[in-house]
Length: 611
Ligand code: F6R
View 1 (cartoon, rainbow, N blue to C red):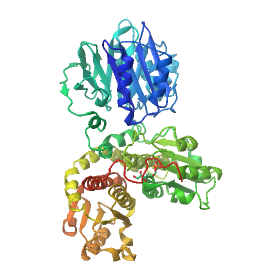
View 2 (tube, protein in one colour; view 1 turned 30 degrees about the vertical axis):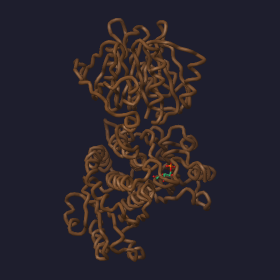
View 3 (cartoon, rainbow, N blue to C red; view 1 turned 120 degrees about the vertical axis):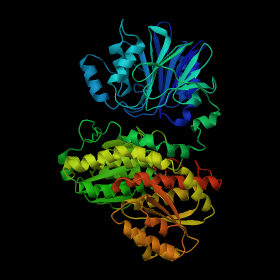
View 4 (cartoon, helix red, strand yellow; view 1 turned 30 degrees about the horizontal axis):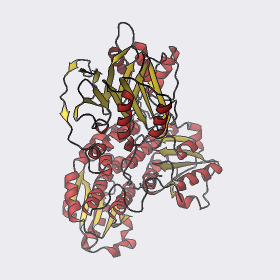
């Protein structure tokens, strides 16, 4: 995610803000910028790439001020470039803003502001905020009033800081669904999106609450709630060291990223579901009904965890769009003779957007005149640039090598794509679409409930930490989740694990089952739930210890299995989003107990840019 730092006090804001931004580097970013109020005017420097580029820029084009704001940008709207880097200004250049989050309704707001004469200089959603503040800022309306009025028009998530050249005594800040913290100093105050940026200066902080706005001066802080009533927010002492703070207090990035999933899934669907009617809006996917009617086949291509997201999506595409769908491992696809032409839609899934095999496969599909869609997390990555259409997952940087939140982001993006296509093509009814949308909106709450199961899962993991092997079983749409669970365990705890479709056991793998082969089985509500129960019996009869992921009302499971993880129920086709969470936790805890390097497992790289 992007990072925000702000400062007001007696020091040179450029140094404080820059130092703070350095502390946020671990979060990943593609450009950075700082603005200060110098001699009565805004001075701004922005650079693409690493912070050292911004430093060089600041060294050659020096700026100075006691009030400043800065930002590291992880692109969401618009490619990484200097124009798109924050801070963003209004037309007059007097107001500057830095922002984290996503403004869902930025397109209608931008259109309206352009009609009113505002000139935009970037492709970002953030710039809308600067122009909206400009619209409301006048003799009768202070910067704080103008920010509060602007926020009334905005839908989405934000943490933001705004400053205005007319008044160098205040920074106005606000947050909703994105974190923002104020650091308390003597005759100086600090602002940051993440406490790690402040620890060098202060340990006393105020965490703003959702909907809050605040006016931060060097010697006072006034906070207002969502209704603009003045409120008190208690200050707290942060006891974390710098490394703990980077990980948000979690022991590992992987654990932090597992916990982020309630938020990241929402970030993936935010702004893509119309509030007024049950519709999926994917502005970046320009496929028309005519295009869709011409498609004879969908061909999904990806590697590793992203491939598992693709396998899950096959069920969805076939069910809802009625288009035959195949899923290919990119390293195989590129050297096969894939039957792909202009009637085949190829979908490429990649967190990094740089995986060499997936990129080569994309180029091959384009040569064969296929229309291409990319599902990517990294904006501006090679795959996202080269595909005809791109759907970003908006999960923020994933630092743990083992993919967790990017996987659920990919699944969410694929659900949206499937339903968008099915609706356009007319293969899904209004009722089905409405049910899907309601169920998807409920998923973050169900994920939050599932995250509460961590301690129980840790207890089960403890019993299996010395196991040498594991089988993961599931059926139907959860079969790829069994593969994903097994991959997680292999990757980070070096235990040999295999995922199987449960009904296939009797054709070979059942020979492996005895008391030394534990079985993890996904047995949540499904039309073939009873079949899975028989498959569990087969394994149990041969001495295997069974861990079952089930829904609370699946009472038979208590008799059939040795350990149960009861997850909230949802529509069967959305259940992969929930069922993968216990498997992520299970692999994580075993890895920790075995003393493995959770975030950087041996022999693996986060982005595989070589063949
Ligand atoms: C597993 C994992 C890898 C990646 C694979 C593809 O946890 O992270 O299997 O999924 O290397 O990477 P992307 O999605 O970046 O193309």
